Length: 138
Image: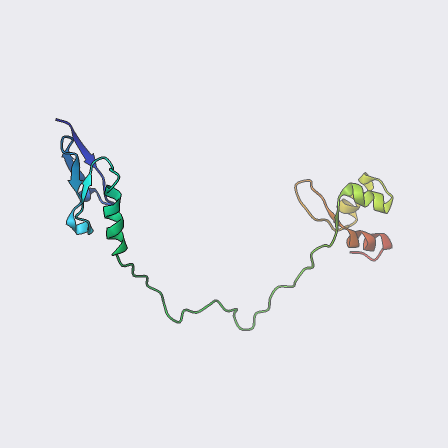
């Protein structure tokens, strides 16, 4: 005689043990289901569960008058930085400024031309490049 165990519920105490010769088992009444279930799923066996589940009520607790987040009094938001309108690659900036690419990289590294990007991907705002070329500083 072969024996099997089915873990049908979340806790180990709810495990159901039965004979393999008996092709069905009942859920414990403590879980709200007393329907007869075949060991192997038969076409009509799922309808029993579906009908039972429609009668179940679900209670959802919610707080009335919950507050939303508000900024602390007296704090000011950080300064807003305008996003660049047109970003250029080093090659594009060099062609606009009519200089070589190493010159643009030197301006970025040593002379304070503002840059965007990281990990070797450098972008230059066109407005910052024009200001830098006019000598206005960025």
